[in-house]
Image (cartoon, rainbow, N blue to C red; front, side, top):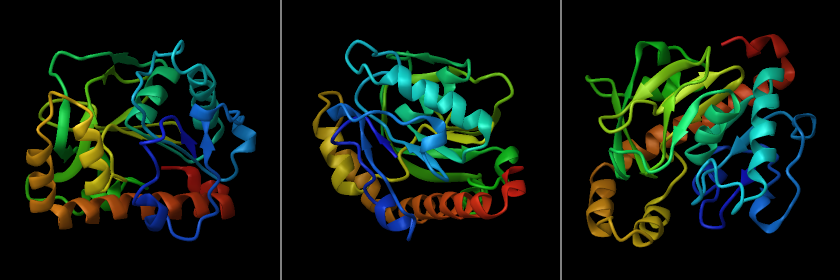
Length: 239
């Protein structure tokens, strides 16, 4: 797992991923980013406060992009979350816009699952929990956004503010939302932005907490199952 900011951590995924053997690479401390053949059976790239292009402020980002490009083409099951999804998009030839015109998507995003998500190895179990309008609520906190998907990517979900909430490319999945985020983490992030109403964010989370955590848990567990399955049966990589 690659961590780019101290306040953007594994959070609820620490329990939801189950008994997987996790190695956390705290890149923001200077810990070296591994190569694709050194990450083991799977890879998670978390979010962060920087943009996907902030190489001068976060000099490890070129190595993370290279890792994502390599891992997703050589068959390593990979999950990029928020910044991780943006880095994945850029690494595979897509485009990310910094401070995108719709503004900050903060609080809960109504993630609407596209038909392509039904039966998908990783996000399919989340899409199965959606309401009658194919939506699940998920924590969100970003102002940058993927505006062009990589060539060959499968578009999996959107939201009213931003179209590319989830996609799959090669052996990697990118999600713009934060399925791992607890209410406490969301509070800390909201408090860090003058343009976010923290209490409104927390009220929205509390009102739909059961739906939020069910979707986040489903994503973590389906990804963990996929990692284990591919490790045991490489042909299961086909999605």
